[in-house]
Picture 1 (cartoon, rainbow, N blue to C red):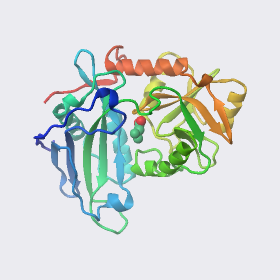
Picture 2: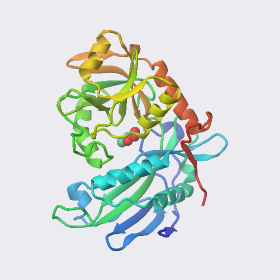
Picture 3: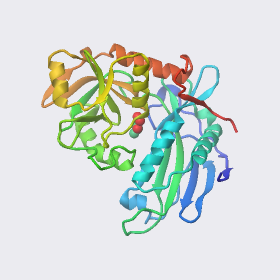
Picture 4: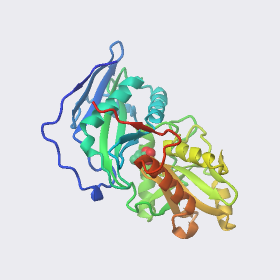
Length: 356
Ligand code: COI
């Protein structure tokens, strides 16, 4: 495997108070960096003090958006054990995304070893309070300088670490969602199924406009403005009176790690979970008949985020009295308890940190 060197920071930062973390506002003392160049392979793999990176202004990421990332978490359990939540899932998704946007994915051993080494350098940054974690941001960017449009022959792989609390300012309370009928985040054949930075750039204007109207995020529809795809930066689930549904992965929906964990948990309880096409009209009809019991988003950042209000064509539909429903509460509790080690990890989701 590519050799990893380590240069430790000589000026460690004070830790932010764990009740004021928010999401993604603080970065730890170190980061992991490695470079790939065609003909040379992966090299210069190192844990270094967190700080600016240098790149040519002609780098492909700056012009043609070759950028891809992952989001994952590491937890400090009550007995002191430090565990990752499903790192292989994120590694495989990173590889699929890299292939789609023509970047080089690091080999699995470099990804895992980089992760272990940077986290052991920054172990003190892993918070332990409930609803906190150290969020991990593996990132790939195209760094070759050129202006003709083609794939970069150079990829930079970074791992950044950020201690986090709740993603939404609402905490784990239900959020207000605007059904988006103008902007699209993704289209068939596009990048929606991978975690390309471009998808998030495409989403910003709709989110901003929703915020101005008083909504926390948007419900994304497909190109026909019919099929439901995602909610904000999350996958979405609806609890109908006779089934639990989430949109089937259709090529423009991200295959979320928490989406997959929720499906596994529901199946393990023999609950009627279906991955299928869901239209906004169906959801409105169920709401009007009182057959929609709960709706929630799933994502690494927020875990489970109940939807309390869904706006569609000028009407605000209130779901479950704008309260956390029983299923979203149960799923949030189970997933976070497994992560924190207070519930048995029967589905083998946790990987312990190797200290180096
Ligand atoms: C997630 O929750 O999985 C995300 O990707 C959110 C991130 C874009 C902040």
